[in-house]
Length: 536
Image (tube, rainbow, N blue to C red):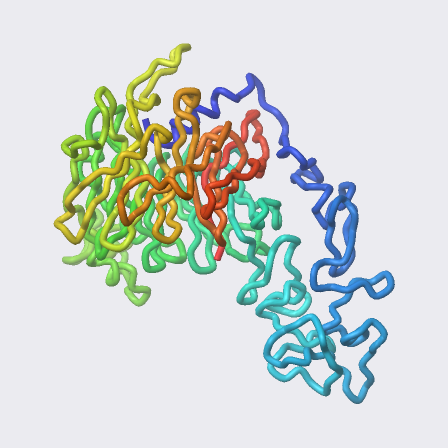
């Protein structure tokens, strides 16, 4: 059973018999069809529709001056650029020197500031001298403000995290404390995957139809900038390489390759996967992609597929005109027909690494079930769920139950793709998500309905020794069933595959915080965090 269906198995237990209206996470209320915190939302501060003024923030349900702003009477001002309050509340610039500029030119500071005859290298917004590359109230252009919880980076309003809410098909920006940092954005139904690269958020939606949506990382752009439909109805992996997007198309057993703008460049067939389709996570080492082949119903095909990407540069060359396909999809030599255009192949199937033949990859009567992949130097790490068949009753049965400890497959590309394994110990059942923090690989272990026997955890692996670390300790996640894990800005975040919550933890100590509900309950009465990504 693939990752998406296994995740839905947990969500199905929480479904009600009838549809429900949108239900917001705990601590938020519905304001005009969206979820808002009356304690911190500057547009709904203390009550729906109560908007805080310019340069004000909402804290504990009351409006006050935002960080970097100063109260001058009833107004919140920036003493570093405001010509009517330049450097101090009672200092106004006169006509001889009408501009208010930071005293330290070239770097925007809140104060001290002085009146000047011009703005120099800064931008004049009226008579205020600002750096539009980093000023949250003039981000990219004068008068263009960022939402609360966002910062202005390189002239774009950005949050710290992006979370994919599978039950409502929304991408929600969050700050480091997991508070909403801008409006939710709706994408194609069936949202399961999320990746961030450059100035773009890429989302993968797999049911009822497969599609990739492209969102601007600038949260002020609310609608997708492009949508690329794909064949099938099940996307299970997403990754970026050299500004090219790769998507594991599980329903048809291929690796879809898309340009930075969302054009389908190629769809590489994965050997043996058309009979038992299920490619999942993928990683890149050298000029090859390593794809976790989850298999079908625990029978055959559980392997790591190897794809040669030596043709990627020519395939993704934006100068390639890619002529239209001829009759019957005919193309000149060295090209093949992809979505009506004759394109150069991006990659070719090399071979598969059979995990059934790798000692220690699973415990009988289980199967390995490779899920996620991550490359570190010459080595590729693949999480192996090690599951056996179980009957949950009520006609619901499948490969859910841990057959033993979770495992990692380690493929050494410098040694002819030699494969070894790491036993993740009794604290890890059904591993999936992987995240790198220096020399430590964090593994999310979620055991679905068998959490009483296999409690949820995030396990640290020392890559130098190839063993589970004792310090920092394994993160116990309590009721949270871990699926994905990321490390952003020195903090770890774990998605709960059974709810709309995200759990923060400190990688240095292994101490977990309280889980925070970030995704709203959807129309069928459930909430689901399907993916999470850092926003650069």
